[in-house]
Structures are given as structure tokens and as C-alpha cells.
Image 1: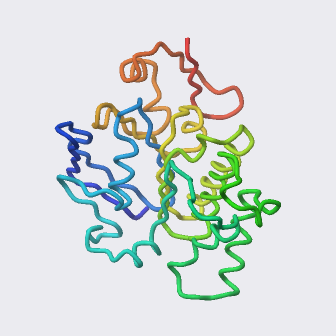
Image 2: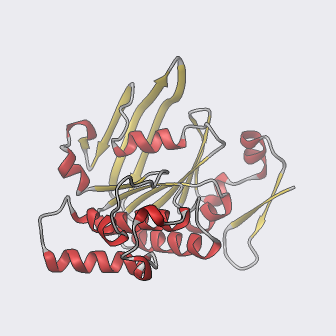
Length: 253
């Protein structure tokens, strides 16, 4: 598997506080990596630096072998798509118009653009809401609209910051099932998750952050151990085999 994204010695400091320290990570095509950790561990900051939305105070990020800082915004938008935590849109666009914005970085191709938008609407189950103004959506519907916009962008690298946070059980599973399919098709996907069981169920790799550093990095079985989770989260847990899937299951005790 080829390396799509690499972070070398990345550090971020904000208002006299070290948010990230000495982050060295590489991400390959065809993989889904979950960033997990307690609140304030640096997950969203790491995602922001990795996708180019935030500038690190130290270190370097390279995308497809080239420094991220040298990429023009339009070219970068054709290589990576970003789903932020916030989904608010301040203008009265329709759901379909917001999803279609994912096609803006690409050269105009009406037939292909329409096909990509329609596929994204279907994947996020938004067909019935396509004409609804986004300002009238629930939190979960707004999150699904943003996810559909990311899908329509059709990039080889995807960054998703807590994509399941506002979703019900069905749409959590559908969203991560779709993300898993993208990785299986060759995309490099990096997703911030709080639910350790969702991370275990869908990710090839879990990077566990603690106070801005990598506390553990490996497969779900390697990272999600009782000793590691108790140490990082300061919470008693049990880790057992999932009854139906070959992944660990984390239970709070």
C-alpha cells in the first residue's frame, strides 16, 4: 500500500499550551484510520493540520510526497475532502445545492457532476430532502448533507471529524459502512471518533491520542486493551470478543 499522507515531527502550540507534540504518522491508500482519545487529546487539531486547515508550529505534512504547504487551494480540494464538526450553512441553499458544491473543485462536466451528486444524495438517504433549505434541517440531517457533499467531491483522501456525532443508530452504521467501502476501493480515510466500538468495527487502524501525543497505534485489537484504555481514559472498562464480529468490544464497568 502506498503512503498518501505523512506527518513528520508535527507540533502545535496555542496560547502557551502544547496541543500536539512530536507527531510522526503515515497513512496509506486503501485504509481507514480512526483517531480516538479523551476530550482535549488533540484529535481535531491533528485532523486540521493533516488536511491543511491548520498550520503546524513545528514539523511537516506531506501529501502524495509533496509538502502540503505548497499545494494551491484548488488543487488540494481535488485531492482531499474535509467533513468538519460544524455543519451550519448561513445561507438558504437547498440540500442538493450544498451537495453539488462538492463538485466545484473539478472541471465542469454536467453529466458526471449530476451523477456524482445523485449518488451522494442516495448514499446519505437525502433524496426526499433534496429541495429542503439547509437552515431548516435537524442536526443529523445537516451532518448527512455535509457527508454527502464530501462524497460528491470524490477525492482519494478524506478527513471526517466526528461524522457520526449527530446521527441516529441507523445512520451511524450507514455512514461508516460507506466510509469503509471507500477505503476498500482505495481511498485513504482518516476519521475522528469518540465511540470506540464504532472505531473497532470499521477501522483497520486506530491511533489513540493522549495529551497531544500518540499513546497507541495499531489494529483495534492491539490498541483497545483494558490496560491501555484504563490508563488513557481513567475509566474502568472490560474488553471482550464481539459475539458476532472478529473485533474487540469495549464495555464500561
